[in-house]
Length: 123
Image (cartoon, rainbow, N blue to C red):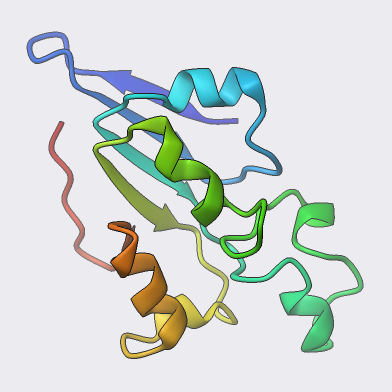
């Protein structure tokens, strides 16, 4: 489930997708060209929670598209022409939460952001 909010004056759109298992064609259509995308960033890797011994299922099996990987959100989102992409709903095991982690640097080098307390968004 997600939300697409449109400012009637500016026409700017914000799409909020806190739990995404896959970027389907229909979902891509909702995201494409939006001013701001708040998207599921639960896990960095698909097997993150399994490798740490915290779950018996992968990220995808629990309904969350991982950020990294050849078909992760980081690889798929740039082609959709989003103005600002912000990862939300991160699990505490996700290394992007660490300011100086290489994973965080990778996200930022791709022009995307990691949500933090106090974040404000304008569309």
